[in-house]
Image (tube, rainbow, N blue to C red; front, side, top):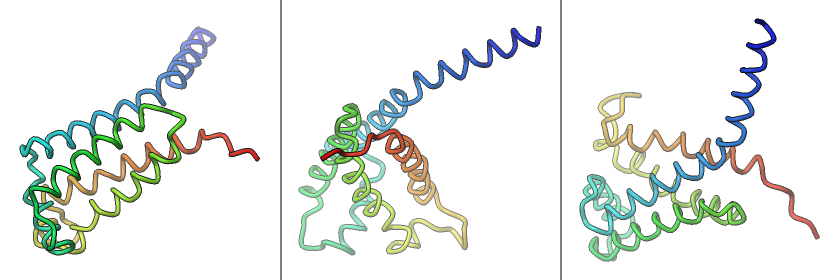
Length: 148
């Protein structure tokens, strides 16, 4: 019986090893593409927060232009993660996106914090990006070093 449990455990671990990275890629794609297309279509619930941040950081751009470009940028990040050979570039692009999306935690505290260490719904939406960063670190840990 003990051997059967160990065998099943090993098969389960092997299965996770096979599906974990494709699933991570698909999850990143879904989140980025979906949230990006909502911005392009003008239906994203994040649009007011993006507009407030835009006014603080790049007030010379119109929201209507910026939100479409930002949505397409997010969609591109999602698509790039579907291709393992593009992990380095997609990770760098994602890092720039993470900096941008974390800015409201500092620049728009009234919109992202109810009180000390108590985020609003918008703040929680931003903080959950830690999970995406962890997935990208997992993908990066499997990269092969560049060769001369």
